[in-house]
Length: 266
Image (cartoon, rainbow, N blue to C red; front, side, top):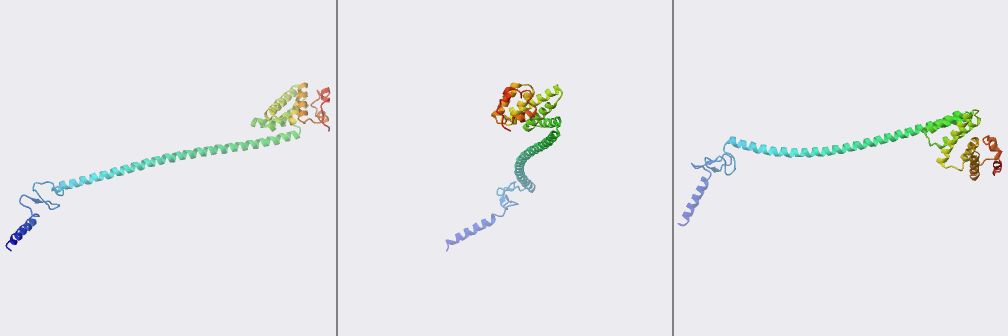
């Protein structure tokens, strides 16, 4: 029992020491924030790292908050910069799409304009054809020739107008009283029909017989003979009576070769 008393005394002393740890000694003071004991001259608590001066501690906290706010602002700025970059790319893509749409619209407008012009041209050609045929029915060959000539000014490769213009000028040459006018009409007929034949390469239609008629009226006997031979080969030679009645072959109809042609029967 005697041995146990010192242990109790020692435990009592330890408990006393524990109670005294929270009480400041003359050379210590308690931290105003964490209550740990620090030296009286300590400006910063070694336990919680806070200034013992309220003002300095407040400044430190403000500085910390400011630093944190700066970091947040940087993050926000980077995010906004990325958004601006993405928006700029999106705007560029939108601009490209708008330009493509604009070009497509322009092409569509051009196509529509071309279609309108073609329709308008076709309508005008049709009107001139009707006009030319009406002049022909009234035996106004000059008027008919003028109408078909207008068609050729609109569409120079119009084969139908070429053939009709050649026929009209030949008919006008046949009834012309003035030699110069007759020659002029024959030249128009010959040039127009020559172009027609070279373009379409038609040697199996009435253009072969028509060329022979033009050459006969121009006094080109050999040319007339050659083209009548082509008409025979193409089986487009009219009957002899129809040829004579046409009045185009007066210069050659009494020639021996003319009468020896294999004329088809009426």
